[in-house]
Image (cartoon, rainbow, N blue to C red; front, top):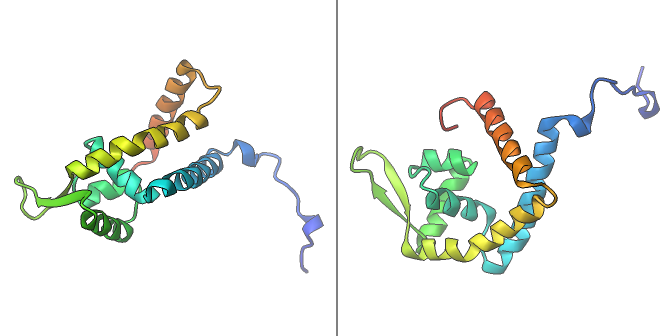
Length: 157
């Protein structure tokens, strides 16, 4: 017996608009779309922006660390880093402490580009946070950090 669309019954305990993973996914997708549109003016992609941001913040340096902090899968990250290196935005260096690990660093050109595009990203952030006061924003960030702590698998993942 096949079920008709009209025959489907909603689960009274499930509220889509109150389901945190759903909301986070919708917010992230919308923020990424808005940022993609804004970065197009400076010929930069969201993954490239994420790499610049992670390196500027001093987070990571190996491909594995950057992949985790920038939330980019390794194959996409490798291609992104290759393009950024060709553009002179990043450089690769073997780590002194462990020569097997190749670190990625911002070049001066990469630092300059970050400084130029930070206002674009900040504007997107401020737009998203309209109507949320500082106390609410701090509490929200604390809550998000706690959720991340609950779901992550390693100290930085």
